[in-house]
Image 1: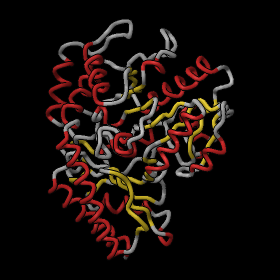
Image 2: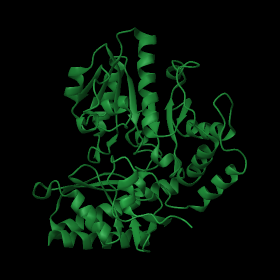
Image 3: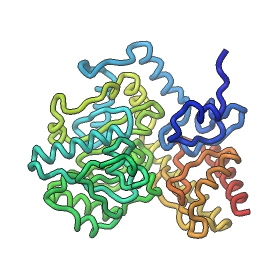
Length: 402
């Protein structure tokens, strides 16, 4: 007989670095989720932009089952077919010429930052090691990536930090220009800051960042962990902006819920990670890459990418209309199906309260910091689920204002 699991069991047996909701989801189908009591939720969270084609998609299940009956794992002393297929397809769809697979966004970024440093040293000399990143950025939870991320609340309290990391304000080209020098090996940026509040970069700004990188012989690294795999209406957000990075990282949606990350780059830059300089036991395993290929089958189509833009505009218009009634938000921002409703000064710090009321109304949403309600639903969420979810959102806002 299976053990009955309760929310209190989490506090008994798990390290207390998380504080999950009171309900326990046990089943998902498409954009709907059911908890232990049978209560249904519309999912506008997608596991923090991970379940990009919803829950239990039959094409992903088929890919996973087929591969599970063949081979699960191979060490990286061997070649596996699924990884090569996925790498070919990513290269065909992007600027990249080489791919490194990992298990997560943090690992993809760790590889990118190590590569940027190594390339800088080999190409330009031992002093070219400075990484410039941005205030309020988020790049993962390894010690290196959390220090490159510009949020001290995540990096404080763990002792001495890796050196040669500089932070500047986002969307401020003068601040970046003032800090860049011959020592700068890379500028690391999210095209849309995720955990920092769903804040898009200005198009002209990213073009100027690219120009500064070229001027100072620094690599431009795009963290597309959250913005990639169709989330913003293009396969990757750099294609939306028309600015090409030297290194790009992907995770979250790339595996549709199965752990997978990738670092994409050019052949010239990739050469700095010569044999034995970096690795991953599970990165690029056949199971994950089989699912990654299935995700690409579904997402990388013009009609799907166009549908992401249309769905995003539908949500934005509906929330803007709701805001005329409730007067809660200063703006609704983001790209495609990566949207943040920023609370006005009167309600700042209350995003978690709204998230809790949404949960009670049967809607899963997220925060992006204490002041922004974040929505990142499935990229193929049906219109009926969108409309029902927004009705539940309206009920939650009504309760919040009262």
